[in-house]
Image (cartoon, rainbow, N blue to C red; front, side, top):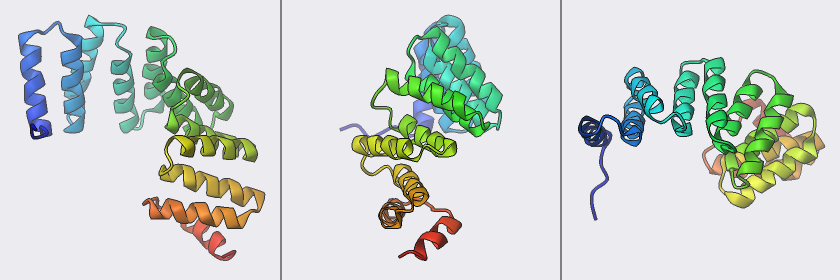
Length: 206
């Protein structure tokens, strides 16, 4: 069995592929992914832009550009690229999920819910979208809907710590502290750092 390549080997391999065929958008995309892993974001942007110039329908490249903008604290830029991804590929769930996340970060909860529902409609197994939707529902005061979204996420990925944390928050809202404690304990077992004020309140009900 071949030893997994480290990031430098991966980058070198795809640099070679790009040099051999500069018009291959997939090679440029793969090189960009390696560069992102190495933290070479400006060079990654150049490769992603080149990939899009060659293949304007390469939705994944727009998503990666959005991720770079998010890493730099530019929510609007992240939204621009993810919106572009959904425009070049109909039904691209990842783009809608990322748009939902960005809207939620900006406090635009109704827009977040709309995009997250689209993401789930296009990909019913999109675990992260269910969890983000659960957060949006809590913000809207829709506690039962939040619980249902978290339970769907855990049905798909039983050890998704964020879903357990969100379930705990939802059950706190309902006053069901026993269930809240069960889920907060599970979230902590899975390595999630629970907010101290949440822990403090729940411990008082143990």
